[in-house]
Length: 114
Image (cartoon, rainbow, N blue to C red):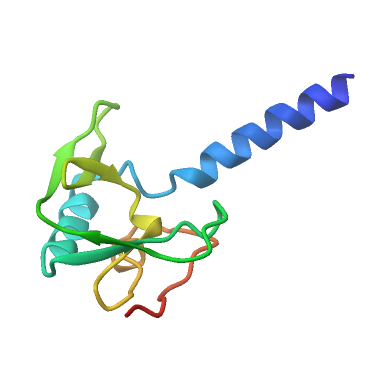
């Protein structure tokens, strides 16, 4: 029984750590991510570790780097919604986090976009 409880807790913690790799950032990375995304009117959301099978196109109206509600971290908001740069790809299909100093893992450096 103890093993099952430990396994459940470990799995939950592993998923939550994987699900937000580059959402909370230092100010410089948040500003760089926002600058990259502001160069186009589209971006793509594709969370491979979450099990996504295809990128979802995002129409960009607003992009901003703002102070988060957690400690001294910042986040990038697209259309008012915080995004995780590890799972965000620019209009050319390049992973945005990998264009900053955030070290995302288990994500593609680029994806094919249409």
